[in-house]
Image 1 (tube, rainbow, N blue to C red):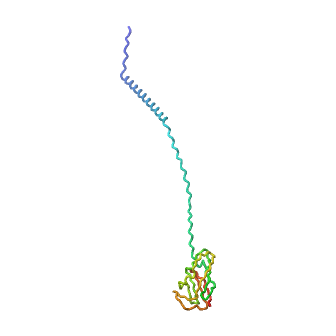
Image 2 (cartoon, helix red, strand yellow):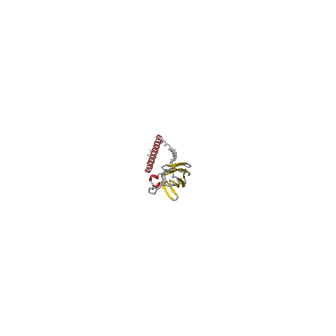
Image 3 (cartoon, rainbow, N blue to C red):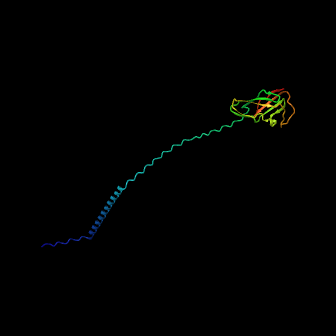
Length: 208
């Protein structure tokens, strides 16, 4: 007589629990691997689609400006003022006079003996003095009317020579323009001329 097959023996619950844990873990692994694969594909596609950033142009250093040429401003020097003549610049000389009944006229020579030009003003510090021995006979500055015996100015270059003249009206004079009825007598007299403070050598002359 045939034996009746026995029903399969039921496994302990622990076995089923372990199986479920293994299946759950396998599912988690599958899900994780799938997620990572999808993420990798997505990320790779994004990198491929994104255009590469255009490299910014390298800034080219601007050429340094050429130094501006230094402009030298030439200031023309002002011309030096012309100095007044002194005794070291000019020699004053009286010549032999022209004697007449009304006046004695003396030629005057002005010679520039200096090395630079100078100005000689005949209206400044200029006088003619006439003496007889120790007696003061006449001086041009005693009266305003005779004070300006020279009315000329000269710009004298080195070596230059100018001529002019001064006159004595054959009369007496006193400081303050006092008058006298005396008439200079015939005889020897001396003339002394000063032009701009430069005095000529005293000249002896004779009137008749």
